[in-house]
Image 1 (tube, rainbow, N blue to C red):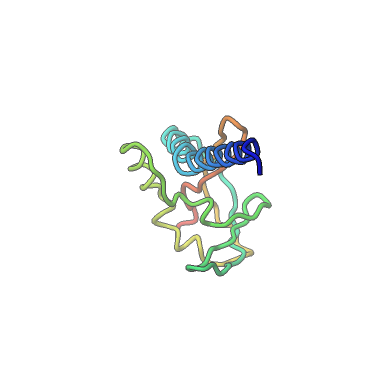
Image 2 (cartoon, rainbow, N blue to C red):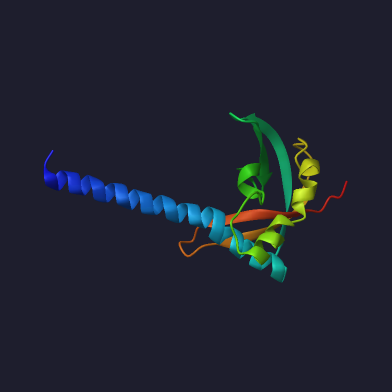
Length: 138
């Protein structure tokens, strides 16, 4: 391997690292920040969520939730963790869905569970949403 090849490989490694860092920032900082800002303004959408099943993972399990005809892991759409400025973190931690998660997570594939969610887009056009509230109060 020549010195030029080694430099080329190193540049690819650095570029890959930068992409991973940007991805992590979007997932755990920017998207939640935008979601909290929209939630504070009351920009919610409503949909029917169907909890259609449960998959085993290494540590525990994840629920499969169908919303608007698409399947999601509950881990991807619940407001689980984020690193936000203090006042935004407080709002994020108090999304009403967190207290109602156990009621929503019951597997009932034929029952519509009305939810409110916040839709978020970033500058690259990627869309993500977070469940905000479970409206079928038990």
